[in-house]
Structures are given as structure tokens and as C-alpha cells.
Image (cartoon, rainbow, N blue to C red; front, top):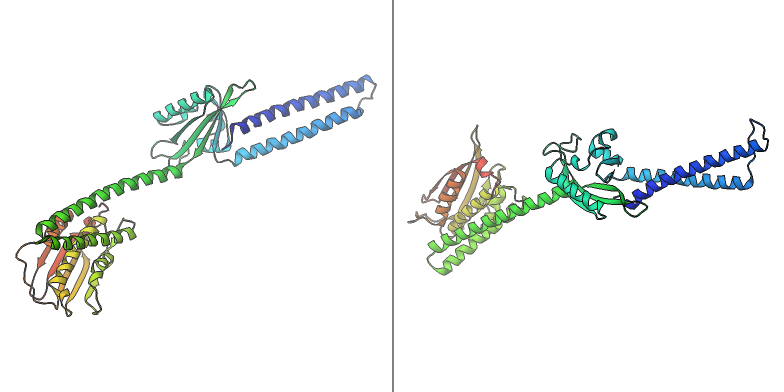
Length: 399
């Protein structure tokens, strides 16, 4: 950002250069007059006295330095990516830098003489600009952040598809008497930082939403566990296992940036504690299917319940037992996910006399939340669970 002192120095140097040029012209006129007075023939160069030659050399050298300084200042302003504008005390634009012209998207003649505050499209931002001008006129520094261009249309006449955000500082350019004679408005493009802040705020809101939903799910799991467990120790054991299933599901979701998780990874995470040295105990097969956070949590709990029951009473309680988890996609107009849990090789299955946590989870969460259909059967050779649900519902990004 170019400081007000640099801007003031630029204009002071320009004024000094003009004065020196006038002085050189005056000196040359004096020399011509002196030559005429001493009878110097016309057409010849008048002789220059040594003292006059020294003064002219000094003036030319100073003039060259000023020209070099002016060129450097111009390059400095051109190199700055900030939009720099010089304003009159009433807020009208008097001068703008090359970056300022690019930000305005208009030629100088379309901007010079216009009210700077009115260039901000939003009423609230125009008010902030007027407040910043008033602060600068009083010798203080005014500052605000605002976008250029209308919502969804882009920059200030630039035709860009993205709105640009600017951090604007307005300060006074002091005159010889120490009072503000003009104003300097420097706007820095902070679009990327602004978008990062918005994204962070969005992520915080999303995290808060997910934490609340997760706590509600844990509360429901705790209530169902305590309601159905025969003893407190049994309740603690079941509740700890279900919390671990939720933890594993969250690990899978985190690896997918919480946006989605592959069904195979969900099955692998749930079944990992039940895989032992016996080859082929658990078989999982199916195409790659991406699931949303809510369905990942629900399926993880559901598969955890099936695996726990299989380890206690079903196929996984016997070395010869096997579990196959398979899935595929069906349907033409609307894809449907079909998943099957099938046990075999374990002890003969006896159907439960009452519905437990797992059956209630399947009926309430899966069917009601995803609009699916599920059947849970207990033939003697092993428990079988089959579900069908619209893939779009299972891929919903909410949690």
C-alpha cells in the first residue's frame, strides 16, 4: 500500500520540477538579453559566463534527478496492486492509479469528477464510505470493507463473475499549512481472505450442527440401551460397543472430509474387530458406492448390532461360521441400493422373542429416514437381513 507521504512527495516533486524548468528558461532569457546588450551578432550562441554555466549545470542536474524520481514514483504506483485514488475534500475523484482504473473498469474520463462514495453499490457500503471520508477530513483514518459490483454479477463494471472484496483505507493528504487539502483512498483486494473467512464460518456452523446431531444420536442410543439391557453391566458393555461403532464411523467420514464415505470402507471398519485368523470369516463384495454422513452413521450402527449378535449367538460365535455382506445397485430411472447380510455355518438360529435395539434401529432410522424397505429373518442356518433404499437418499450430504 502506498503511504500518504509517498503520494504527497510525488506531487511536491512535480511542482519543484515545474519551478526549475521555469528558472532555467528565465536564466536562458537573461543570457540572451545580456548577449544582445553586449553586441553579440545574431545567429551566434551568446557566451555563457562561468558562474551562469555552473548555475545552469546545477539546475539541469537537479532537473534530471527529479525526472528520475518522478519516473520511479510512476513505476512504484504502477507496480502496486492496490487501487489508489486521490480525492478532493468533497469526495470527488481527481486521480486514480493504473490498478484503480482496472478495478473501476472504466476510462479515466468516466471516473474523474465523480463521487467516490457513490461507486460502492450497496447502500450500507456507501454510508461506510461517507463515514471514512469524514474521518479523513478530520485528520483521522477511515477504514471499511466492502464488495464491488452487484450480487452475483462481479466487479465494479468489470464483467467478472465473482464479486471482489476490498479493504479500504482513507487518509488525509496534508497541505503546506498542515491541514488536509486532499484525500487518499487506498483499496486492497482481500477477496481470497474474505472467502476463506466465509468458508471457516460455514464450517463452524456445519460442525456445530453435526455435533448436535451426534449428541442426539448418542442420547438415543443410551436411552434404547438402558431400556432393553437386563443388567447395568450388560448396558455398559452394549453402550460402549455402540459408541465404538460410532467412533469408527466418524473415522471413516473424516477420511472422506465428512462429505462422503465408501460403503466398502464402512463395512470394513465395522467388521474389523470380528475378523480373526480363520480365512474367509467375513466376505464383503459390491460395487463402489458413496454414502452420505447420515447413512454412514446409521449403517455403521446397524451392522455393528448384527455383528455383535452374530458374535454372541450366531455365525461368528463358531469357528465354522461365516458372514457375507454383499450389495449392488438396481433400477433404471432411480438407482436403488440393495444390501444383504447373510450368516451361515454357525449354530442353529432361534428367532428372538422380542425386538431389540438393532431391529428398532433398522425399522425407525433406516426405513423412516431413507424411505427404504428392510426385512430381518432368522432361518435356522443363519440370520439374514436385506434392505433396499433409494441411492439418492443414502447419499444425502446432511448429517
